[in-house]
Image (cartoon, rainbow, N blue to C red; front, top):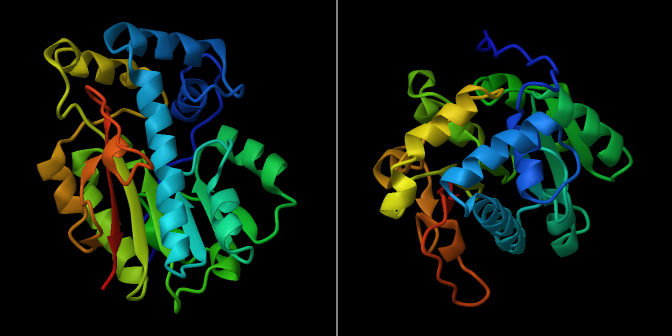
Length: 268
């Protein structure tokens, strides 16, 4: 019997929505005043928040290009968020025009916008699903219509598991996806962190979590030791688990702090 998924959140423009907040940080237009106000509070605590979001998005592009270059042509993006420039299908299909991508989310804003914008894209599907129900996602007919789990698949859990509480056992969820894919598959992963934050930012990490307490999803910051447990089913490719700006940047970069840890792992 599949695990019960969390109920799909109702649309309320007065409640900050984590997908729309991220869209706003990236310079998108699919957001409301409540989202912009919540982001403004975060920026008061840590002015580098929009930069961190952009760095995370740039990591996503680099990681997808890398995995596609390894011959993987199937991508399952769980918790995909709102479509924006250089989305997974655009990056993957630039490497392999036949690449197949399924975007999975349970947010009604994400689903409606994604289906409207991506409905005519070849080899792309948008599916209602929750990361807390891996079996439901893996067995979804819309997913299996595009994704062949007997061949390597790249699972993306990007900027997602910090919205999953410890009590919901994020490591178990990652293990479930790992168990569903064959050797030669990949995981692309990032997670919000206060690790390495300067004192003036670190002191506000709990206050930042309180901003998300008023949004559609709460956030749990985690450090490298906690995140490493989630990644155990995969062999990490170089440079391992690092801050997003340090994952194979095209040129050497240095930031005082970027608020995401990132890794790409291979299923052996």
